[in-house]
Image 1 (tube, rainbow, N blue to C red):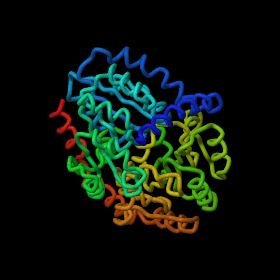
Image 2: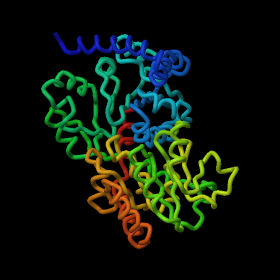
Image 3: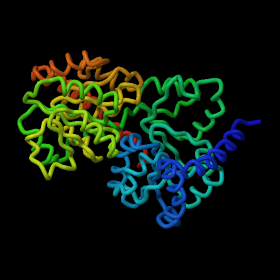
Image 4: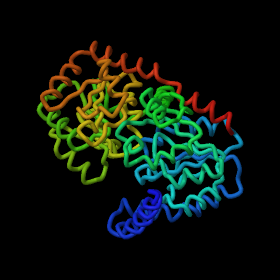
Length: 414
């Protein structure tokens, strides 16, 4: 019996279970209830429309990769409409009001009936999947309807199911793609082993995204007031293990002419209060900054979202969280501002981290002793900060351009 049969049963069971779990779990409730609105929203915005460009992103990280292409399409393909779908609540809830899309919705669960209904309404001229997420029923229906389908900023690894004995059945889903735009030679070679030659190494569109930010006017007056003329460490997207080390460093170090901005990944009120209470230096929340004089504080905790990529502009040193097992966050954001970077030891899945470490623009720490040594040296030595920051910036400039390659292909097939 074909594996797709068991896959379809699993999808229906998953949907049933999620409906029950949603009664007790807020995140799952967002996942389930948000999908109840999908078809109504699509019918209002897209039914009967032509030249729809559909972008699918698993979550927020993939959205940021697709964003340069989305915005270029919106600017330059005037007679088109843009649809953005998300699988995860963490992407949808942050970007559901994204102004550059005509609609932002959850992707329906991957059943045959959902796939047909979705495409009946949207009738996309092209479907663009960002990085990964391969939904067999949706992809098969796209293929059946001869809808051009692209994968952009794709990344393939040996440990993915496609390259294992038990995952051969899902390789047929890849046949639905008209073209693959991948990040590196390894991905191209792995696809070649599966028999695919419709592959272009375009690089990673995240380079274009972070480079775009440097061309914008950045004027975060509150952050500038807090920084003053001090040397500032910006710790971005931190998790508890990152914060444990950072707080120990901050607490143990005598007050100097240096400051710290911490932007935690989790900004739930109880987590923010716990973090603030663990720091024995004068600490201010970003939400409190209007009621206090920020120059009197040594630590600023960012308890809001959407600011981090621009806050790195004010950094002299960056610590990027997630390198202790949760998944390293975006180190290209500080790199584009010529900032030296510190990360935890778990970064092998991230090509940009491996590259920047090899260039010595990014430094790896494994414990509090290494953090003390590394951070103290960078705070003291401006020349070293400048040299490592210049290496970071040079790396960004050498890797921009993926958006243009992909967009030129898109324009030809629309």
